[in-house]
Length: 261
Image (cartoon, rainbow, N blue to C red):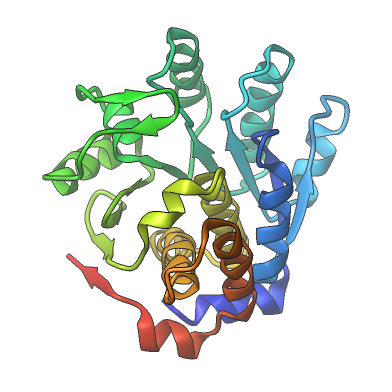
């Protein structure tokens, strides 16, 4: 699995983002730091043409903007048409009925390769009761494994639930990632950046479960390495980016904490 980082740097996949306007700059920079190429678009006019040349597509609903909703649906459908892997980040899906209804429509009309969210977002999509406010999750990750396996089988895609322990499943196998640091919660957009990392790995490999797990592992491990001296939050963000840029297979083998169930 760890060797996939070499594929990203070798292939330099083009990751097309339809994403959160709050974190769009960070998503572009994290994609570059890993070794992929970011492309951001909010254009209806170019959607079919640009999806055709992309290696993968990331759709993030964090900034709900009326003029973008149909565009995001169109981008997902084009990804399906041209067999491009597509990631959904349903940010704050439980926050409002509007978000919930839009995500339901996305799931009904687009075949996603992978869906990533915090525990509350993923449980909500699966029909479970959740606790949360805005885009923040107050749900715990106890007994999450069986829940996400059911959701993955229902939605026929890889599902990732992030938390104190990150869990990724294709409905059969589960990869659990034990790296991380609480500081990742205090940087806006680390979840959005995770989706960019996932898109980078997906654009380089057809091993979907492993690619999605590597996206999560990259963020969790690099956050842990950045926080090894308990630095202040501003410095932490800089060191997070530095560690992603410097990450290689050797560091992944040395520090990665992964369990396959």
